[in-house]
Amino acid sequence: MGVRLRTLHIGAADFVWRAAVRYAPGTEGACLRVVRVRVWGGGKHSRVLQADLTAPVTDESWHPTPRDVKALVEHALAHGWRPEVRGGMFVLRNAHLTPA
Image (cartoon, rainbow, N blue to C red; front, side, top):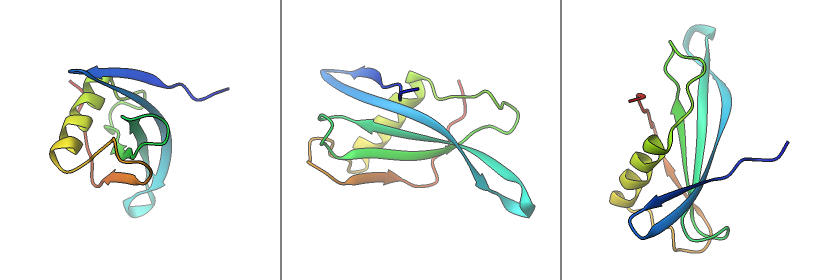
């Protein structure tokens, strides 16, 4: 099965994003559900935005919505992400979104 890329329009800019569920070791042997979001804003060779989101513990089916990704993009742009730059990665650390 291929990777599903989604399109997001913010103002005059178009972004392509995807999300993948991963699991990471947590405290006291617990396993954390993490959703890795990647966003491209200037084509496939542009600087990618990456954020690992911790999913709410109470909802194992949680997946980021376009509204969540829009918030990530706006936050990253405000903190120095330049999607038009060729190559590289802009990583948001300790990202956590609560579903609306």
